[in-house]
Amino acid sequence: MLNFNSGKVTRQAMDVAVSGFVKGTAGLAAAVLMSAYSLAAEEGVIRLVPAQSSIISASLTVPQLGRHGLESVSVLSTRQLCPGQTDPLCFPTALQNLYASHDFMPLWRDPALVDELLLQLTALAETHRVPGLLQRVQELQQLSQRDDQRGLDLLATDTLMVYQSTVNQMLNDPSALYRPANFTLDAQHLASAPMITVPLTLTSLQRLRPTDKHFDALVAEMRTLEQAQPHGVYLSGRPAIKFGAEIPNGDKLARMLNTYGDLSDQDYANVMKMEQATGESAVNRLTNTGVLHQAIRQFQQRHGLTDDGVIGPETAQNMARSYEQVAQLLALNLQRNRVLQRHGQGEVLQVNIPEFMLRVLDDENVVFESKVIVGRSSRPTYLFSSAINHMVVNPTWNVPETIKEEDVIPSMKRSPDYLARHNMRMVSGWSDAQSIDPAQIDWSTVSARNFPYEFQQRPGPGNALGQVKFMMPNDFSIYLHDTPVKRLFNKSKRNFSSGCVRVEKAHDLAYFLLERQRAGQSATYDNLLRKRNPATINLRKTLAVDFIYRTAWLDEQGKLQVRDDIYGYDDDSTVPQEHDYIAMMNYR
Image 1 (cartoon, rainbow, N blue to C red):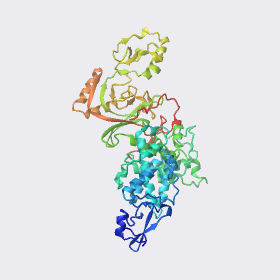
Image 2: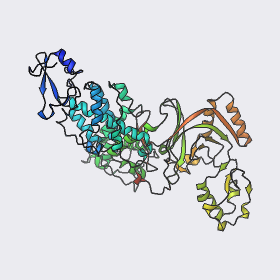
Image 3: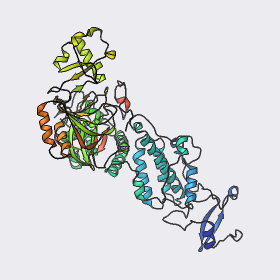
Image 4: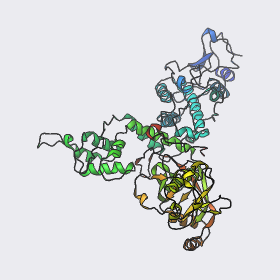
């Protein structure tokens, strides 16, 4: 039995009374503190120091978690992270239960754990979608500088619960990452605290990272951009700054291109040298020539623009984007990786809509790629996951309802020979597909929305689907297909379709898929193409597909890539409000 009168307790008695208290480890307090008593070491014995009289009655058998160590920092982030919580911590009850079940031992004794948590929190905070998280990171950093690490331990554990709960929100509603939405914890989230496996390990924490092999480099890039001074590059692009022309505020442009890595340090130094002959600084009359011209082209390449070195309106608009905005884009797109179902797991075909590119990845290594044309903003390509399970060679094209109402019927009203010119026919329906003579219809009285018949385009060189289409189960009638109009692939921006995705290398993709099947399939495909009759090839070995929307990332060489937000998923103010719907229904 403990003798409180003597003021001293033997180590054996203390071990029995308070299991789990240890003498200082790695700069942390011996324990994360019970509210009734704290510990002090003196001459090899452990002394109980009485706490405030208001809490002396606390039971030793059911100790309560204190707030010791937090008093040195004002924890104000909680008001935004979990607005309904009155406690300084978001999950006080869950913290009490967690620490009590582990004898109030500290959980963050390894500094590498804290570093990993701060790294992931920074990657999420930079999205600016979690109010209060950046402030919470700052509070953790302040506590990490204190000699008493108990406050850091408490706040780090609470923050880990906040982080996991926020990630769960993203996974449960992926569409929130593609529309203006903030992540906060309401009463329902606070009532169901995430489970934390103790002891914490670096491996278990790293599993919480969004999947991206460039994760560390991405966070480093975000920090660099956030810390950089504003570049001040605001060119209109009208008139265009062509090769040889003087660049207004060229010094600012050169500095920005150097920050992004488009202009090397050595070239930047050379460009900025003073010219003594005229007595003027070169920065006052930099021209679009030499290494500066090449750097502008490199900038355009990284932004998916025509790399002609001419600073026109599109290039000027991308150059005006602030460092902070780019960092936010990187962070937002990094979090979007969480909802890719098969990222980095075997073979998957990815269509990155804003990049207008299709790639087949095998454990993140690119094994096939092709330019694509995607849906325009008024008819966007949906985001979803599926798998290609069959191909149709020499397909007929069943005209979708939207195109029927908005394109075909208005065209028939203007030109009755429209169907004949486009190798199309009118049918009674998709089930029986009996041909209907369009001459029988009084097109002047037709209502597009109530028209009872359908339209179908026969196989042939001019078929809208080309010579092959790739089918995958989905609710949106979206598929990949060939196209007879190849010239559009020369455009830098290729959002021209009505929702389906046109593939430049459609035949190469067909051969790629067939090579994954049993031998002899490629010859069969060639024979079918020559016959020009519709035919279906079922794929025994399917290929997983993800339609994704990624506007900022680091490529295989570690270069920053940025693309225009064509659908307004990053910022809905950038796209005219012409949507009848948003291509996010039932995402995943």
